[in-house]
Length: 84
Ligand code: SF4
Image (cartoon, rainbow, N blue to C red; front, side):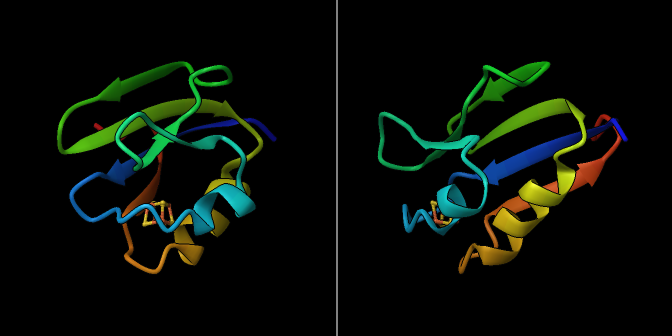
């Protein structure tokens, strides 16, 4: 079932361990060696110095939640809805 959700990476907390990439390939290494989010399947991706946040509308929230659970620094947040 398709649903809308947001995935946020706290770039201050992220330490480039990349446990997330193994769980969900939408996480990618960015130009600063931290976790970014591939914009290809996202409705939108916003990156600031402190965070990167993407909105998705698909059936892959479980993958994102697994990546969040795997992050040793709790840098990933997954929230249902638009995250507003
Ligand atoms: S697992 Fe967490 S700390 Fe590691 S790259 Fe992904 S978001 Fe960053």
